[in-house]
Length: 377
Ligand SMILES: *Cc1c(COP(=O)(O)O)cnc(C)c1O
Image (cartoon, rainbow, N blue to C red; front, side, top):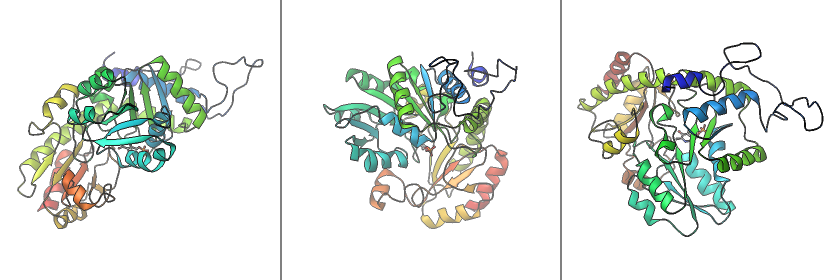
């Protein structure tokens, strides 16, 4: 099955009892047993629910893994994966991971004895240099936010295999339509499905795909024990979103290419960050592991004043956090998502006061360009 077909026909499509072409919303908590312990595969909806199961089968197929799991948010998914580790274990993470990932590692899981080190994984030598005797996993986000840094998945997985570590990839920015990390050696793939997979700014959800029977058993045990599951209604909404992921990602890409061309030629823009630009430092790696480069772009307009001027003048770009929806979004990382990082550290990382991040939506590209042009004027 090719990619777009799999998004529609992967997993369990429709309802075999009625012929309904959409999986029903099984709004139910418990299931009748014919005799004690004799049931049709479902006992209680925390453990398993048919609508959630259909979504879990779909994401498993789309990410080319062994089993899928649906959680109530991306953070619930990330936390459940971290529960695979024990007190005393250590994880190496990409230094500019999603802020919530940084927070849960350094303010919650650290209290339970799970230690973490954050390194620039776009340089593989940094990973190798920070492996300790108690290191259990490498956790990678690629591309990152807001600088769109790229980590070589195959290279990182070779290091993980050599040292007996799990390789975990947050694939939220790329989506499985453009990047399938398990094919490059990842053991676990995580999504904030709130973003591109849902795609319509109407559901908060997290997904995990694992590549082995053992990890599937371990993660199912954790999901059932800790209970951060996705409800049937949201599972259905997510399946509805995933059906159009292919055409949406193609359109995001086309719009983004036109906007990139506009931004790179604009005199007020000092720098554009996008993994699909040949000038990107990891363009070759990006080309090797991504089929498309996505709809996330950052660009520098030189100063906080200019950036705020752009943000207040745009009409079609909504000033908001989050990304990956049909609506174009705009944000100022230094004042919003990355405000908690000290200014010196932000400048070191390249997250300057004039850096604007956009999530290119599915409006007409000409409207979006005209909008940016008047805001930058
Ligand atoms: C949003 C996001 C998360 C967290 O997901 P929620 O659904 O908001 O809990 C994790 N990783 C990345 C890359 C994200 O963008």
